[in-house]
Length: 544
Image 1 (tube, rainbow, N blue to C red):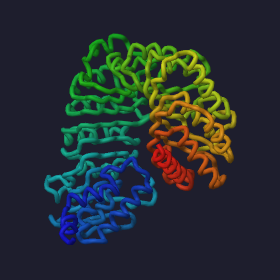
Image 2 (image 1 turned 30 degrees about the horizontal axis):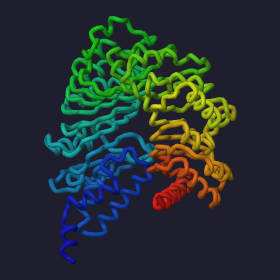
Image 3 (image 1 turned 30 degrees about the vertical axis):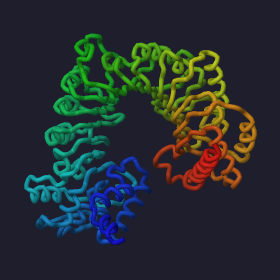
Image 4 (image 1 turned 180 degrees about the vertical axis):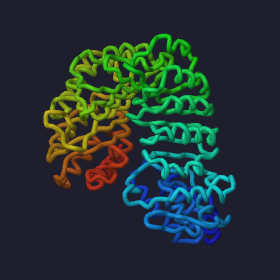
C-alpha cells in the first residue's frame, strides 16, 4: 500500500495538476470570493504536508493581482509609513526569485481584492534596485499574461513595467485613464512593443479617452499578433490611414475587435480604397465590429472588415420608437453573411435606453440573416411591466411570419439588479420559461427573473398536462431580483421541477455573472434550486 502513496506524493507534476483545480493559473474572470478561497486552500495544502509544499506554492504564485506580496518577501524590505522600501542584495536562492519564476499572470487592474485607499504602495526605487540586481535577467521567466489598468499618476504605478515587460509575455491588456497620457504614448507603449516582440494578444480599452495616433501606429510593429482588441471610441486623433497601415502589416492576425470612430461617423470613400478585398488583415477569421452611428451602419468600419465580420455590436444612444429603426442594419447584414452574432448595447448618457416595443426587433429574426447569437446590454426591452407577455406576442408573430425554425442558439437578455421606474421592463417572472422552451431552439440562455410565491406551483400544474417538443437548452445563467422575500421549501421544489420540465437537456445553471456567486439570490437560494433540479433530472433519466 505504501508504494502507490509514495508514487503519488513524489510526482510533482501530478500534484501540481491536482492543485491547479483549486485555483487555475488565470483566474481573472473568477469571483473574488472564489479566488480568496482557492488561495486559502492552496496555503493550507502547503502547510499540511511536506510533499504538497512545492506544488501548492507553485500554483499559489501563478497569479498576482498586486506586486506587493512579491515585494514583501524581498530581503531587508521595510514598510516606512505606508510605503515599502528596500536596500541590499537579492541572493539567487531567496524567496523572491523562487516565487517569481512561477508567476504566469500579473493583473494590475484595480479590484476589490486590493482597495486603492488602504493598500500600501511600493517606492519606485525598489523596482530600480531590483532591475539592477537582476543584471538583465528576466524576473518572471514564465510570465504569459499581463493586465495593466493604471490611473492618471503614472510615476508609481508603471515603475514596475520594465520588470514585467518580457519576451515571454504573450498577452497584454491596457486600460485605465493613463493610456490617454503623453507618458503612455511616448514611453510605456513603445517599451511594450520593444520588449514583447513575440506578443500574440493585445487589447487597448477606454470608453472616452483620446489616445494619440502614435499608439495605433506602433501596433503595426507587433507583427506576431494573432488577436487585437481596440476599443477606443473616444479617440479623435486616429485616422483611417493609420488603421489601414496597421492592417497591411499585421498579416498573421486572425481575430479583431474594432471600436474606433472618426468625426461624424463619416469616412470618404477613397480613405479605405486601398483596403478593398483582403488588403488589410488578410488572415482575419473572426471580427467583432462596433457601430455607433444613429442612422445606420457606421462607415468608420472598413468595408473589407465588415464583409468578414462575425459579430456586429450596435451601440444605441437614444430610445428606439421607430419600427424601421434597424432596417438599414438589416440590409447591411444581408450583404455580410459572415455576421452570425448581434449585440445591442446601451450607449445613452443618462442610463439604459428603451426599445419601446419588441416588434422593432422582428427584422433581426428573419431567415435571411440566420443569426446564431443575440445579446442585449443594459436596456429596457418594453414598456410592459413583465417581458413574458410581449415576448410571447413576439414569438407568435414570428411563428406566423415564417415556418423556418429560429436559427438563434444563444440569447442574452438584460439583467438589472437595481430598482428602476415601474413603467419600464426590468425583468420577467418564471412564466417566461415555458415560452422560451416552446418557441426558441436555444442552447444557451441568460436572463433575470423575479420569482414570486405560488407562481411556479400554479405554472407547474398547467405545464404538466401539456405536450411540448423537447427544448435543446443546455446552459442557463440566471439572476433573481426577488428581494428579501423568503423562499419556502415547496417553492424550491416547484421551481426545480419546472426547470426540469421545460429544459430536460439542461447541463448547468449558473449565476448571471461570475461575480454574482456571492450575491444573496444565488448563495442562499438558487444554488439549492440547481441541486434539486439535477436530482429530478437524474431521477427522470433513471426511469427511461
